[in-house]
Image 1 (cartoon, rainbow, N blue to C red):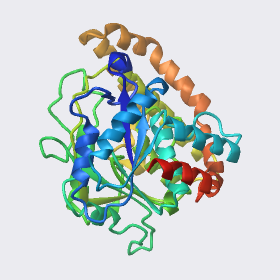
Image 2 (image 1 turned 90 degrees about the vertical axis):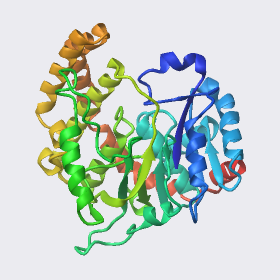
Image 3 (image 1 turned 120 degrees about the vertical axis):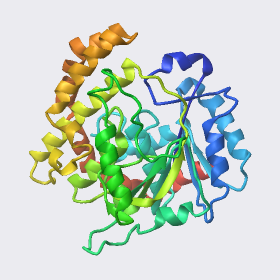
Length: 390
């Protein structure tokens, strides 16, 4: 399952902050081409589903471009899901769960896009979903063997392994977060030290271990997981790590496989106030959602103490101070004075308001999710629509 993000080249400057990266329709070197080329070496490669994310106005052009890329790899069984197919699936979801608010399953918003992938998998009757990002490449022919290792089995403690994460190496060949960014603008807004502490321990441990980390571009979910637990469509970003929290709310775990990895080769992304604001919304909302769930007797608690050394601090009372200090110093020492000053003056209140108003919505969706998956599973009409595009 590969979400791939596209935008008309003339609109690219206005897309800053919407998604981490979008490929221009006239790009000479699209990340998706490189990703699919790397998959040609994989033994026992299953169907590859491309979730084509683009503005509605660019649907036809993006569809033609992605079809040409897929056609250049005839050995890969590819199914493309565009806004056209997605709208039909979303209509069916509304019929199954008319009281779910917002676009819970769509090709807009990180969590909703992931849910669209799960919906497509259910419609086509697939028992495992493996997520890969289009700016990643697979590094070996045994990718599928590694991805499926341990899945749907149990640990020695009889705990089910229904969701697992690998990890990625960056362009320099390191699995650790870059620690070269220093200075006052990064002092309070960096996960690098605590993340690297956790990752080093996980890489040195047993092959499969309980995870505090989720790599959305190297993640395997069994049907037992994805038919019971949805991604959160109300979170602005970080939907992969959030899925780990969601699993824990329902008594499951994300497991870490220290032998399964990909190479991550993203385009350069500038530090911008819009992206920072998405993160502010993300962490305030995440903290509020987990606090709301903790007050409900039917869910397990997920606390910062359980998530140390990473990412627990981001869910604690430290968050407010980190946001305030980072917004202030970036307002003073970066070119985006106005953007960061607005976040310092008003952004925290806006994010807290969003968190308060929406903290309950994911659990409302969850109350309908098994019924949604059951209603979509093997739907012959939607399957015919998707297979026609295959």
